[in-house]
Image 1: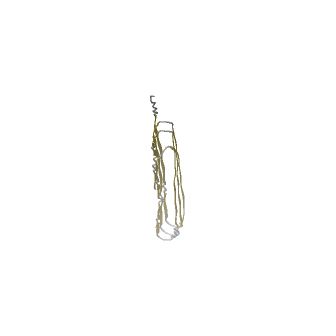
Image 2: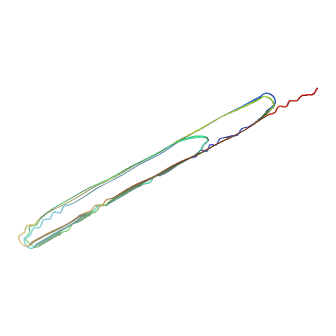
Length: 296
């Protein structure tokens, strides 16, 4: 999953008043400017992942051979059991969320950024294996002639669980603010008598940023194996001449579990505010009085 949020407001405010006033008697000039600029950004990004993987294996193998042989002369009985039990499971779970959030604001004058970033990954991995193997043999053989009985059961059960869980989070949050404010006033007043000039400027600029980014991952992986193997044999041998009984059992049980869990989080947060404020007022005032007197 890839989340990209780009919020780029560009706000530029420039005020350039040019005022020129010229008069000869009693002049009163008042200039009042009230400029208010407010910008409020609320950015919320929430990413929630719930991943649940459950695997349940129930394997039951039962073998019950009942062998009855009766004779009274030259009896050869051979019994060979080869039992191999192995269990193999391959479970691979990979989760890679890529979250990128970039916010660039160009605003004039005062700025208050509040940035909160919280990431809570919860990873739970549980694996349980229950293996029960029971084998019982009862052999009964009574007879009176040449009887040869051979039984060879080969039982192979293999179980190998390979569990790999990898979770990679890349969270990048960058916030850049560029604030430029320029105010240029050119006021030129020329008068010959009584001149009153008043200029009042009120400039208020407020910018508030609230950025909240929350990422919650819940990953649960449970694997349960129940393996039951029961083999029951009843062998009884009774005779009166030349009796040979051989019983060979080969039981091999192998269970291999490979569990690998890797979680990698990369969180990068960079905030760069650039604030530039320049104010250049130019005020030029010249007053000239010319009075002339005659000669009598």
